[in-house]
Length: 150
Picture 1 (cartoon, one colour):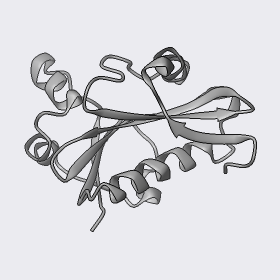
Picture 2 (cartoon, helix red, strand yellow; picture 1 turned 180 degrees about the horizontal axis):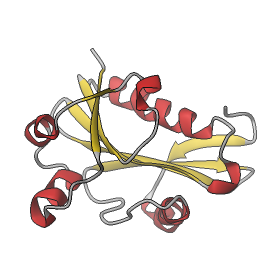
Picture 3 (cartoon, one colour; picture 1 turned 90 degrees about the vertical axis):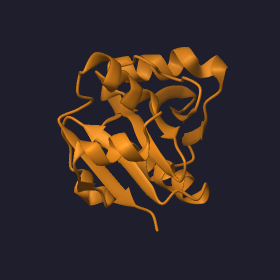
Picture 4 (tube, one colour; picture 1 turned 90 degrees about the horizontal axis):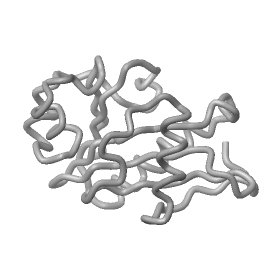
């Protein structure tokens, strides 16, 4: 959970290193972090960057990019707060669906259901993660998820 000591704010280009560090500390792939067409948020606890999350935007859909919380603050509900802030942002921008790739985790508790990779590939073909997959043939996670926002 967030409190008066924990804030989530839109990341700016000046936050690039902080976003990168949080994602690296969490063991996530950082290729393409903060590329054009992606919105990021930074979570700070007592002024220190402890979480980051991004959305790659398409036409009426978004793709979750890197939900990361520093290992030192895990277990406090901060990851859930980050994910839900991204869900809210996608809803407010009018997205009908939110997609994500994952190597694990309980994404059903966030309202996501597993879907075939081909759906994401066709619904948001220009997303940086999808473009990277097409170029490298390296699957971006072992499972593909969708949350309906309608």
